[in-house]
Length: 314
Image (tube, rainbow, N blue to C red; front, side, top):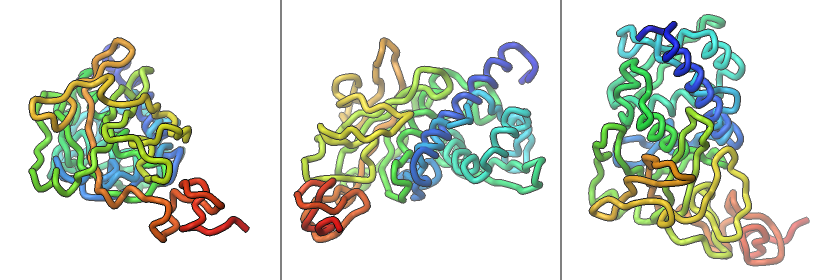
Protein backbone atom coordinates (compact mmCIF):
# COMPACT_ATOMS: atom_id res chain seq x y z
CA UNK A 1 0.00 0.00 0.00
CA UNK A 2 1.41 3.39 -0.99
CA UNK A 3 0.83 5.52 2.09
CA UNK A 4 1.50 8.79 0.32
CA UNK A 5 -0.99 8.25 -2.49
CA UNK A 6 -4.14 10.50 -2.58
CA UNK A 7 -6.30 7.42 -2.11
CA UNK A 8 -4.54 6.37 1.06
CA UNK A 9 -4.37 9.92 2.39
CA UNK A 10 -8.16 10.02 2.15
CA UNK A 11 -8.33 6.59 3.76
CA UNK A 12 -6.12 7.68 6.65
CA UNK A 13 -8.29 10.72 7.13
CA UNK A 14 -11.50 8.70 7.21
CA UNK A 15 -10.04 6.05 9.44
CA UNK A 16 -8.93 8.69 11.86
CA UNK A 17 -12.44 10.09 11.95
CA UNK A 18 -13.83 6.66 12.55
CA UNK A 19 -11.47 5.98 15.42
CA UNK A 20 -12.47 9.26 16.98
CA UNK A 21 -16.10 8.28 16.70
CA UNK A 22 -15.36 4.91 18.14
CA UNK A 23 -13.56 6.46 21.02
CA UNK A 24 -16.53 8.64 21.69
CA UNK A 25 -18.79 5.67 21.63
CA UNK A 26 -16.60 3.90 24.07
CA UNK A 27 -15.63 6.81 26.26
CA UNK A 28 -18.90 8.61 26.74
CA UNK A 29 -19.88 5.97 29.20
CA UNK A 30 -18.08 3.61 31.49
CA UNK A 31 -15.35 1.28 30.29
CA UNK A 32 -16.17 -1.41 27.85
CA UNK A 33 -17.44 -4.77 28.90
CA UNK A 34 -15.20 -7.73 28.60
CA UNK A 35 -16.50 -11.10 27.75
CA UNK A 36 -15.97 -13.99 25.48
CA UNK A 37 -15.50 -12.95 21.92
CA UNK A 38 -15.69 -16.16 19.96
CA UNK A 39 -17.28 -15.94 16.52
CA UNK A 40 -20.96 -16.61 16.88
CA UNK A 41 -20.70 -16.72 20.61
CA UNK A 42 -20.69 -14.23 23.42
CA UNK A 43 -19.11 -11.05 22.23
CA UNK A 44 -16.66 -9.03 24.19
CA UNK A 45 -17.67 -5.51 24.01
CA UNK A 46 -15.21 -5.03 21.41
CA UNK A 47 -12.68 -6.48 23.65
CA UNK A 48 -14.50 -9.39 25.04
CA UNK A 49 -17.89 -8.84 26.41
CA UNK A 50 -19.70 -5.72 25.54
CA UNK A 51 -18.30 -3.09 27.76
CA UNK A 52 -16.78 -0.60 25.42
CA UNK A 53 -17.66 2.81 26.73
CA UNK A 54 -19.57 5.18 24.53
CA UNK A 55 -16.57 7.48 24.57
CA UNK A 56 -14.48 5.10 22.79
CA UNK A 57 -16.97 4.76 20.14
CA UNK A 58 -17.15 8.13 18.81
CA UNK A 59 -13.94 7.68 18.57
CA UNK A 60 -14.34 10.89 20.53
CA UNK A 61 -11.21 12.40 19.29
CA UNK A 62 -10.08 9.50 17.36
CA UNK A 63 -11.21 8.83 13.89
CA UNK A 64 -10.82 5.61 12.10
CA UNK A 65 -9.53 7.73 9.25
CA UNK A 66 -6.36 8.49 10.98
CA UNK A 67 -5.51 4.91 11.59
CA UNK A 68 -3.82 2.83 8.98
CA UNK A 69 -2.41 -0.60 9.58
CA UNK A 70 1.03 0.57 8.49
CA UNK A 71 3.79 -0.13 10.82
CA UNK A 72 1.92 -2.52 13.06
CA UNK A 73 3.14 -6.00 13.77
CA UNK A 74 0.73 -8.84 13.20
CA UNK A 75 2.16 -11.99 14.74
CA UNK A 76 5.60 -10.55 14.27
CA UNK A 77 5.16 -9.77 10.59
CA UNK A 78 5.39 -6.16 9.53
CA UNK A 79 2.26 -4.86 7.83
CA UNK A 80 1.14 -1.38 6.89
CA UNK A 81 -0.24 0.13 10.05
CA UNK A 82 -0.25 2.50 13.00
CA UNK A 83 2.83 4.56 12.26
CA UNK A 84 1.13 7.76 11.15
CA UNK A 85 1.54 10.94 13.19
CA UNK A 86 -2.24 11.26 13.38
CA UNK A 87 -2.66 7.85 15.01
CA UNK A 88 0.23 8.35 17.41
CA UNK A 89 -1.07 11.77 18.43
CA UNK A 90 -4.57 10.37 18.98
CA UNK A 91 -3.25 7.42 20.98
CA UNK A 92 -1.20 9.62 23.31
CA UNK A 93 -4.15 11.90 24.15
CA UNK A 94 -5.61 9.11 26.29
CA UNK A 95 -3.62 5.85 26.06
CA UNK A 96 -6.02 3.90 28.29
CA UNK A 97 -9.05 4.81 26.18
CA UNK A 98 -7.16 4.30 22.93
CA UNK A 99 -5.97 0.89 24.12
CA UNK A 100 -9.55 -0.12 24.83
CA UNK A 101 -10.82 1.10 21.49
CA UNK A 102 -8.05 -0.68 19.61
CA UNK A 103 -8.83 -3.88 21.48
CA UNK A 104 -12.31 -3.78 20.03
CA UNK A 105 -11.23 -2.64 16.57
CA UNK A 106 -8.80 -5.56 16.32
CA UNK A 107 -11.22 -8.01 17.91
CA UNK A 108 -13.87 -7.14 15.34
CA UNK A 109 -11.69 -6.84 12.25
CA UNK A 110 -9.02 -9.53 12.65
CA UNK A 111 -9.41 -13.29 12.96
CA UNK A 112 -8.76 -15.52 15.95
CA UNK A 113 -5.09 -16.31 16.51
CA UNK A 114 -3.92 -12.97 15.10
CA UNK A 115 -2.29 -10.41 17.38
CA UNK A 116 -1.66 -6.79 16.44
CA UNK A 117 1.22 -5.14 18.31
CA UNK A 118 2.04 -1.48 18.76
CA UNK A 119 4.84 0.23 20.66
CA UNK A 120 4.25 3.82 21.69
CA UNK A 121 7.13 5.98 20.44
CA UNK A 122 6.38 8.43 23.26
CA UNK A 123 6.52 6.05 26.22
CA UNK A 124 8.01 2.84 24.84
CA UNK A 125 4.99 0.91 26.17
CA UNK A 126 4.08 -2.07 24.00
CA UNK A 127 0.44 -2.97 23.39
CA UNK A 128 -0.94 -6.21 21.95
CA UNK A 129 -4.50 -6.61 20.69
CA UNK A 130 -5.98 -10.00 19.78
CA UNK A 131 -8.24 -10.68 16.83
CA UNK A 132 -11.38 -12.76 17.12
CA UNK A 133 -14.29 -12.24 14.72
CA UNK A 134 -12.34 -11.63 11.50
CA UNK A 135 -15.02 -9.41 9.95
CA UNK A 136 -12.61 -7.37 7.79
CA UNK A 137 -9.89 -9.64 6.46
CA UNK A 138 -8.79 -7.32 3.65
CA UNK A 139 -8.35 -4.30 5.91
CA UNK A 140 -6.65 -6.54 8.47
CA UNK A 141 -4.02 -7.48 5.92
CA UNK A 142 -3.14 -3.84 5.27
CA UNK A 143 -5.46 -3.03 2.37
CA UNK A 144 -7.68 0.09 2.39
CA UNK A 145 -11.00 -0.70 4.06
CA UNK A 146 -13.84 -1.40 1.64
CA UNK A 147 -17.27 0.10 2.34
CA UNK A 148 -18.50 -3.31 3.50
CA UNK A 149 -15.55 -3.56 5.91
CA UNK A 150 -16.13 -0.06 7.23
CA UNK A 151 -19.78 -0.87 7.83
CA UNK A 152 -19.39 -4.24 9.53
CA UNK A 153 -16.53 -3.06 11.78
CA UNK A 154 -18.61 0.00 12.73
CA UNK A 155 -21.60 -2.22 13.51
CA UNK A 156 -19.42 -4.55 15.58
CA UNK A 157 -18.00 -1.64 17.59
CA UNK A 158 -21.51 -0.32 18.22
CA UNK A 159 -22.69 -3.77 19.32
CA UNK A 160 -19.92 -3.87 21.92
CA UNK A 161 -20.59 -0.41 23.31
CA UNK A 162 -22.12 -0.35 26.76
CA UNK A 163 -23.33 2.87 28.32
CA UNK A 164 -22.60 1.59 31.82
CA UNK A 165 -19.22 0.07 30.94
CA UNK A 166 -20.00 -3.24 32.66
CA UNK A 167 -19.26 -6.70 31.36
CA UNK A 168 -22.22 -8.49 29.85
CA UNK A 169 -21.95 -11.51 27.59
CA UNK A 170 -23.86 -11.27 24.32
CA UNK A 171 -24.28 -13.37 21.21
CA UNK A 172 -23.12 -11.63 18.03
CA UNK A 173 -24.54 -12.70 14.67
CA UNK A 174 -24.26 -11.52 11.09
CA UNK A 175 -22.01 -11.68 8.05
CA UNK A 176 -18.45 -10.54 7.55
CA UNK A 177 -17.45 -8.06 4.86
CA UNK A 178 -16.99 -10.86 2.33
CA UNK A 179 -20.48 -12.23 2.98
CA UNK A 180 -19.53 -15.20 5.16
CA UNK A 181 -21.78 -15.92 8.15
CA UNK A 182 -20.43 -15.60 11.68
CA UNK A 183 -20.64 -19.21 13.00
CA UNK A 184 -23.20 -20.02 15.68
CA UNK A 185 -24.83 -23.09 17.22
CA UNK A 186 -28.37 -23.94 18.28
CA UNK A 187 -27.05 -24.17 21.85
CA UNK A 188 -25.88 -20.58 21.61
CA UNK A 189 -29.26 -19.40 20.35
CA UNK A 190 -31.00 -21.29 23.15
CA UNK A 191 -28.69 -19.87 25.81
CA UNK A 192 -28.83 -16.30 24.48
CA UNK A 193 -32.55 -16.60 23.96
CA UNK A 194 -33.45 -12.91 24.33
CA UNK A 195 -33.41 -11.04 21.03
CA UNK A 196 -31.74 -7.71 21.61
CA UNK A 197 -30.89 -5.35 18.75
CA UNK A 198 -29.39 -4.68 15.36
CA UNK A 199 -26.53 -2.23 14.85
CA UNK A 200 -25.48 -0.56 11.60
CA UNK A 201 -23.82 2.55 10.20
CA UNK A 202 -20.36 3.79 9.26
CA UNK A 203 -17.93 5.36 11.73
CA UNK A 204 -15.35 5.87 8.97
CA UNK A 205 -17.57 8.48 7.36
CA UNK A 206 -19.95 11.15 8.60
CA UNK A 207 -22.96 8.80 8.27
CA UNK A 208 -23.08 7.87 11.96
CA UNK A 209 -23.97 4.62 13.70
CA UNK A 210 -27.44 3.37 14.62
CA UNK A 211 -29.19 0.84 16.86
CA UNK A 212 -32.70 -0.58 16.77
CA UNK A 213 -34.68 -3.03 18.92
CA UNK A 214 -34.86 -6.60 17.66
CA UNK A 215 -36.63 -7.78 20.78
CA UNK A 216 -39.80 -6.31 22.28
CA UNK A 217 -39.46 -2.89 23.89
CA UNK A 218 -38.78 -3.03 27.62
CA UNK A 219 -41.80 -2.79 29.92
CA UNK A 220 -42.17 0.19 32.27
CA UNK A 221 -40.61 -1.77 35.17
CA UNK A 222 -37.74 -3.31 33.18
CA UNK A 223 -34.21 -2.09 32.55
CA UNK A 224 -30.86 -3.34 31.24
CA UNK A 225 -27.30 -2.10 30.92
CA UNK A 226 -27.71 -2.82 27.19
CA UNK A 227 -30.14 0.07 26.88
CA UNK A 228 -28.39 1.56 23.83
CA UNK A 229 -29.72 -1.37 21.82
CA UNK A 230 -32.71 -2.76 23.71
CA UNK A 231 -34.70 0.23 24.89
CA UNK A 232 -38.16 1.06 26.19
CA UNK A 233 -40.73 3.19 24.38
CA UNK A 234 -40.08 6.07 26.75
CA UNK A 235 -36.30 5.75 26.96
CA UNK A 236 -34.68 9.11 26.25
CA UNK A 237 -31.25 8.07 27.55
CA UNK A 238 -28.47 9.44 25.40
CA UNK A 239 -26.09 6.93 23.88
CA UNK A 240 -24.40 9.47 21.64
CA UNK A 241 -22.83 9.11 19.17
CA UNK A 242 -25.06 6.08 18.65
CA UNK A 243 -28.62 6.93 17.64
CA UNK A 244 -31.57 4.65 18.45
CA UNK A 245 -33.97 4.57 15.50
CA UNK A 246 -36.82 2.28 16.58
CA UNK A 247 -37.23 -1.35 15.56
CA UNK A 248 -35.06 -3.46 13.24
CA UNK A 249 -38.07 -4.68 11.27
CA UNK A 250 -38.61 -1.20 9.85
CA UNK A 251 -35.18 -1.04 8.24
CA UNK A 252 -33.64 -4.50 8.01
CA UNK A 253 -33.92 -7.77 6.07
CA UNK A 254 -33.61 -11.14 7.80
CA UNK A 255 -31.54 -14.04 6.47
CA UNK A 256 -33.29 -17.14 5.17
CA UNK A 257 -33.35 -18.76 8.61
CA UNK A 258 -34.72 -15.57 10.23
CA UNK A 259 -31.86 -15.65 12.74
CA UNK A 260 -30.06 -12.39 11.96
CA UNK A 261 -30.28 -9.38 9.65
CA UNK A 262 -28.27 -9.24 6.44
CA UNK A 263 -29.01 -5.67 5.36
CA UNK A 264 -30.40 -2.51 6.94
CA UNK A 265 -31.40 0.53 4.89
CA UNK A 266 -31.43 3.93 6.54
CA UNK A 267 -31.48 7.39 4.93
CA UNK A 268 -31.27 5.67 1.56
CA UNK A 269 -28.02 3.84 2.38
CA UNK A 270 -27.71 0.04 2.56
CA UNK A 271 -25.64 -1.17 5.53
CA UNK A 272 -24.18 -4.50 6.61
CA UNK A 273 -25.48 -4.92 10.19
CA UNK A 274 -24.60 -6.94 13.27
CA UNK A 275 -27.43 -8.59 15.23
CA UNK A 276 -27.18 -9.34 18.94
CA UNK A 277 -28.91 -11.61 21.44
CA UNK A 278 -28.59 -11.56 25.22
CA UNK A 279 -29.19 -13.64 28.32
CA UNK A 280 -32.72 -13.29 29.78
CA UNK A 281 -31.25 -12.62 33.24
CA UNK A 282 -29.60 -9.45 31.95
CA UNK A 283 -33.02 -7.77 31.75
CA UNK A 284 -33.87 -6.54 35.25
CA UNK A 285 -37.29 -5.92 36.74
CA UNK A 286 -38.18 -3.52 39.53
CA UNK A 287 -39.46 -5.69 42.34
CA UNK A 288 -36.99 -8.57 42.00
CA UNK A 289 -35.34 -7.60 45.28
CA UNK A 290 -32.05 -6.34 43.84
CA UNK A 291 -31.21 -2.67 43.36
CA UNK A 292 -29.52 -2.88 39.97
CA UNK A 293 -27.08 -0.44 38.44
CA UNK A 294 -29.88 0.65 36.11
CA UNK A 295 -32.37 1.29 38.95
CA UNK A 296 -32.78 4.26 41.30
CA UNK A 297 -34.41 4.93 44.64
CA UNK A 298 -37.90 6.40 44.77
CA UNK A 299 -41.51 5.70 45.56
CA UNK A 300 -42.67 4.02 42.34
CA UNK A 301 -42.25 0.75 40.48
CA UNK A 302 -40.18 1.87 37.49
CA UNK A 303 -36.43 1.64 37.01
CA UNK A 304 -36.08 5.37 37.67
CA UNK A 305 -38.07 5.14 40.90
CA UNK A 306 -37.94 1.61 42.27
CA UNK A 307 -39.05 1.58 45.89
CA UNK A 308 -39.17 -2.22 46.15
CA UNK A 309 -35.51 -2.73 45.22
CA UNK A 310 -33.75 0.52 46.06
CA UNK A 311 -35.94 2.00 48.79
CA UNK A 312 -37.04 5.59 49.24
CA UNK A 313 -34.59 8.33 48.39
CA UNK A 314 -32.92 10.04 51.39
